[in-house]
Image (cartoon, rainbow, N blue to C red):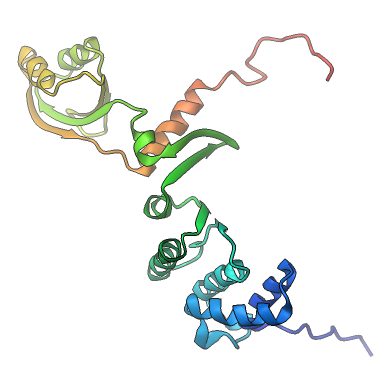
Length: 245
């Protein structure tokens, strides 16, 4: 008769979290007691005796958070904690993490591609690009690394007006909308300069809006700057004598 595979037992929620405490080195009794506490904290009290295969994606993420909390660490490393969650589940998870930080004063390192999560939870930001740290600091510090930006729209000829802006040190970038641009200006720039240059070139400004930089815009700015300033690739760089190491 052919051999049948042995049935692999599936852990229950409380067993999974207890195992995490066991692996950390906690006495088993303490790990078990603590597992019940953290499952209650993350909202899984009623599901603690269910098998893992019966958990939804959102509850699996909560279960992982409980397993990370079982030994009461001072620092939490959270990798994509909202991955796979629907909008309501994502909001609930972010609220849970935010409350955790406020109530326990734990430090959290959040790794995620969802920049809205970072902006909502984090005080300090580290931007990685192709495995390299290209920017870090608080949101305010990172925003101060760039000049002022304005969104402008106008009626009249483009060329003379845009050239005049460039002559004054501004950097206008046209968008897909006619007679519309985003302009980086020097720090000493006064908004009256827009109107003075517009009047000189028979242009009527119809929009002048300071552009606020959220984390997504900041991310694209610093990664674009890193990409354009990186050295030439090995194929593009001139040959140099090789050296042994």
